[in-house]
Every structure is written in structure tokens, then in C-alpha cells.
Image (cartoon, rainbow, N blue to C red; front, side, top):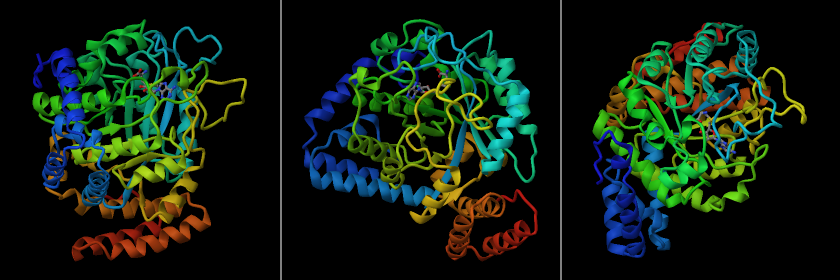
Amino acid sequence: MYNVKSKNAEEFIDDNEINETLDYAKKNKSNKPLINEIIEKAKELKGLSHRDAAVLLECDLDEENEKIFSLAKEIKQKFYGNRIVMFAPLYLSNYCVNGCTYCPYHAKNKHISRKKLTQEDIKKEVIALQDLGHKRLALEAGEDPVNNPIEYILECIKTIYSIKHKNGAIRRVNVNIAATTVENYKKLKDAGIGTYILFQETYNKKSYETLHPTGPKSNYAYHTEAMDRAMQGGIDDVGIGVLFGLNMYKYDFVGLLMHAEHLEAAMGVGPHTISVPRLRQADDIDPNEFNNGIDDDTFAKIVACLRIAVPYTGMIISTRESAECRKKVLNLGISQISGGSRTSVGGYAQPESKDDNSAQFDISDNRTLDEVVNWLIDLGYIPSFCTACYREGRTGDRFMSLVKSGQIANCCQPNAIMTLKEYLEDYAQNDTKLKGEELIKKELNSIPNEKVKKIVIDNLKNIENGKRDFRL
Ligand code: SAM
């Protein structure tokens, strides 16, 4: 029986409820009055239920689809403005005991190079990342209690935060590691992580079990209930996602929203971010064997419907997607993107050769961080290296209530401007610097509060004079 507040995975992600939702959505895909009613409801900016959102995803009316896309753009503009937060993944270790059929780290893959960073290696990686201009990382690791125990992850986090090189610093470490215990989540919280990220891959229990035949990750309930444990352990910013391409996307779209509804109902705060990765080619992995791939237009519709359904949740897209595809979904709701990423273990300090491959998947967007920053500015976005909210304690429900009241915009814009200025001073190529300075001049005028504007102008001078790390 479906129960949004239940602690039991199969009750808060109830298969019947998803199938009934999909039937309802299909029946109403051309129901103009209902679709317009849902769009009107969405305009109140309070989000939509998984049932309503499923109808919008299924909608096959051209005019209404236009309305859906333009509402997604409007919501994105209202809550996130033209800021795009930048991050990079850092792969710590690709040792893994699981048998995930779509991931090259699966234990049976004997031709991938297995690597694990030492603390010395991490220093080199972090210095290389700092020299690119990154301030925010997402740590990635395979699941292996012997090679990558929680103590190893904690030690890595400590090392990463401790490295100060020139004007560089990693100010926020998000963590994407396997589902674990409440006790371990407490330790991650104490180590000062930002968001705990864990992708569900698919919410369909049957598919999940086929895709994860062996290893600890094969336990559907343990994996699906991980965010409840993370929140119980004190982590109030969690990031969810599915790997599109593994299972029927409509099912997982509904599952994702039911998960978000569950976290809000049972734990008092919804997910901080939603990621929308798509399955990619990788060593030993051919995405075409999975039969559930989605084209770019469907992908854009998913992003737009998620934006409308959960307006306060950040949305992340990685370099799995091409520049062209990223451009298409940026204004539909994406608020964070990675740039200059390496998915190999140790790949920032030492790019890998073809025959020494430890990478998790092939990257589509191979541009450098500076090229991505330059491109974002050309597209009218402010690339932001801001990490202020979490460092000011604006996490969990405090963050959510600020976003919901629209207040977050009063500090995000200035923080984006100031952190972009740091990037321009320390890391940008000439052309990016010229364009960035012009953008900052323009964006200063859009700060309505004169007091705040004066603080920002003073801090921009301070940054030119060598001072760093200002935030509101
Ligand atoms: N080992 C942890 C786990 O299993 O959750 C953490 C991270 S894993 C390194 C990060 C994510 O990469 C996975 O959750 C999965 O969604 C994604 N991934 C795995 N194989 C992929 C592929 N071939 N293409 C795209 N993404 C992939």
C-alpha cells in the first residue's frame, strides 16, 4: 500500500501507485482542460504532485507543451536567475565489489585499471583542480569495504579541505558514495560535507534487481532508504537522481518525484538537488544494449517537468551530456553543471593514456573549465563558484524556506558576482576575463538593494587587491 511517510521503500515507492499514475497520465495526455488546470496550479510555484507532473510529462498537445516549456523557463529565472553553479567530480577509487551491469567498475571487469588515490595523489589532484579554478567538488568512489572503507573517504575529505595552494581552496565537498549506515552518515556530516548524493539508478524494483545482480548494492530497500538514514545521521542536504537509459523513463520520473515527496513528508525536507545523468558508453559497457535510451527532446521535457514539479530543488547536469544538449536544458531548469571534468582516478594531475583506462564513462563535453565559463557568459549566464549557503549554515529546511520565500536571490546574485570575480582574477584566459568583467558591470546594476550593491562593489575592489572569500 502506498504510504508517503512510510520508512519502507516499497511503500513510499509503491509500484501500484506508479503504474496507476502512468495509466492516469496516459488517459489524460490530450485532456486540454485538465492539463491547463495543472499548468495554472504550477504557476503558483508550490510544485506539483507526482500524478499532476506525470500528466504534463505525457501531454501530447503542442500548444500546452509550449506552455510547459515556457513555465519551466519562467520558474528557473525566478528562483535561480541566470546563475549557474560550477563543480567538478573527483574520483578517489574505482575498486568496487558490486556487479552493476551498466558500470565499468563492476567487480568482474578485468580490463579496467583499478586505482585508488593516496593522500599524496589527492594533494596533486586537488592542486590541479584548484589551478583550474574549482571551489566545489563531488567525490566519487566505487563500493569496496576493504579498499574504500569510510575511514578512507573521511581521510580524503580532511586532506581536500586542508589544501591551500596560491589563492585556491576547495570550499565545498559533496560526496557520492554507496549507501551506508546512519553511523557513517554522521561521520560524513562531522567531516563537513555539503550534499550527500546517491543515484537510485532506477526505482523499479524488478529492473533494479536485474541491473544489480550481486554485491551490497543489490539490496533495493537498503539503497532506496539510504536518504532517510543520511538525514537521520544529520545530513540535511541530499541529492537524488536516476540513471536515464536503464529503465522506462516515465516510471523513473514518477519514482523520483515520489522519493522527493517522501523525504519532505517523512523527514521534513525535500532533496537539495536532483541529477539527471544519462547512460554513457564506457569500458565494457554499450548503452545500446539497455533498450531504454531517451532522445534529447524527451530529455528536455523531463528537465522542464521536473523544474515545474519541484521548483526549489537544484538540478545538476554533468559532462555526460554534449555542449549542445547542455545548452538546450540550461534555461529549462538546470542550476549546476560540471566543467573540465575527468572521470578517471587521478586524471586531473595526470591525464590517462588509452591503454591505462580507469575512467567511469566517456565524457561528451570535453571542453576546459575556462571554455565552459566563457561559453556560459556568451549565453548570458553568470558562472558562479559560490559555496556560501552551506558555509553560512543555510542547509536543509533553512535553505528551503529561504528559496521558497524568494529571499535566496538577494544573496545568490552578489555571491555569484564576487566568486566569478575571483575566478577572473586568478584563473581566466584573457578573452574570458574581458567578457566576465563586462558581465559583472552589467549584473551589478541588477542588484536592487543599494546597501548590498555597495558591499559588493567594495568587495570587488578588495578582490582586485588580493583578498579572497567574501560572501553574503
Ligand atoms: N559507487 C557509488 C554508487 O554505486 O552509488 C557511487 C558513485 S558512482 C561512481 C556514480 C554514478 O555513476 C552511479 O550512481 C551511476 O548512476 C553513474 N554511472 C555508472 N555507470 C555509468 C555509465 N556507464 N554511464 C553514465 N553514468 C554511469
